[in-house]
Structures are given as structure tokens and as C-alpha cells.
Amino acid sequence: MEEEYQRARKYDENDLSFDVDGNLNAFETTIRILGGLLSVYHLAGNDTLYLDKAVDLGTRLLPIFDSPTGVPYSFINLKTGKATVDFDNGGYSSLAEATTLQLEFKYLAELSQRRVFWDVAERAMDVFKQKKSHNGLFPILVSPLDGSFFFHIRLGSRGDSYYEYLIKQYLQTNRTQAVYKEMYNHAMTGVKEELVRETPGGMVYVGELHPSLPRTVLCRNKTI
Image (cartoon, rainbow, N blue to C red; front, side):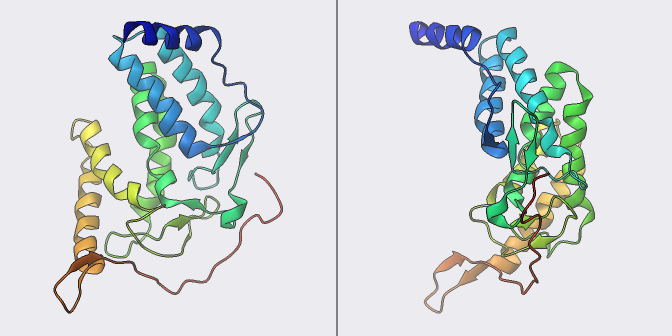
């Protein structure tokens, strides 16, 4: 598909701009666009066009990590650099979005040799290393302001990626960050003990935990 590839590369070189004045979902922008640029850089034989674009986008995304805890805010204006909480979720970020950006940012740090991309990714993870879990499991919403948790514990939406990316972070660093292997093993034990259930008829399913937690609506009428 050489013709299609060259057409796409020409677009990236001449027309792709991240000077976008609007609130974009930081999670989707990172895993789709930043991740895509890093992937094609690798697959295209280290074409610096894609790395330059990735560094530009990664730099524009950095303000999402400028929270009191390091947990990323949910939205970003790539033109102004203004990060914003998710008002529809009462100011909470999701567990998945806070703990999956690490792969792209750590790889970008390695390729660009810019430590800041690594540091922001690790600072976000520090919240989960330090907080007390429920047998390795966390609720699906986390506050970027104080690191508090809210809502259900589940392997479905907003929670799933946390668990799969623990082992990915361990493998990505050539098995040097053992803490993520330990967190993954703890979480998988928790899944088996807390979420895997069996019906009276012998059918196995994965359930949810609905802990009774008070909810504090954060930042209802302001942006960060």
C-alpha cells in the first residue's frame, strides 16, 4: 500500500496541525493520535517526521498532568494549553484514563530523551502505588485534585485498562519496574477473589463491587 502510505505521509507533513482551539478528550488524543504517531515512527523505520509531530503533540498534552496529585485532567485545549476537568463526571477522571497514558509518554520520553514525559507518567502512577486498594482493585473514578476514589469497582468501562496496563508497563521497561508486576499480580488475585463468581447453575461470570462511598462533586462551576 505504498501509494496510500505516501498520501498519508504527505498529509502529515504538510497539513497535520495540533493548533486546535477546542476541548479534546486527553485520553483518546493520547492513545489514538500520539500512539499512532509513535507506532508509525517505529514501523516506518524511524522517520523523524512522525517523532517531531509526536513531540509537538506530547508537549501540548503536558498541562493535563498539572493537577495537585498528578492524576491527569480529562480535557485539553491544544492551542491554549488549558486543561479542564470532566464536569459530567463531577470533576473526576476515570481510572482507565489516568493509568494508560503511561505507555505513550514513557516511549516518547525514550525516543525524544526528554525526561519530563517520563516524570509526568510516573507521578500519576504514584497515586495508585500509595493509595490503599481493595485487594488490588480500585473504583473507576479518581479525583485529580485530592486522589480520592468514587463509584464501582469493575473490569468494564473506565476501569479495564488499569489492570491490563500494569503488566504492559512492566514489560515495556524490559521487566525493570517490578512494582508494576507486583501490582498486577495483586490485582489479579483480587479479581479472582472479589469479582469472579458462579451462579447456582455453575456458570462463571465476572461481577462488580458497589462499595458505599460518599460522593463529593468537584469543580462544578470552574475550570482548572
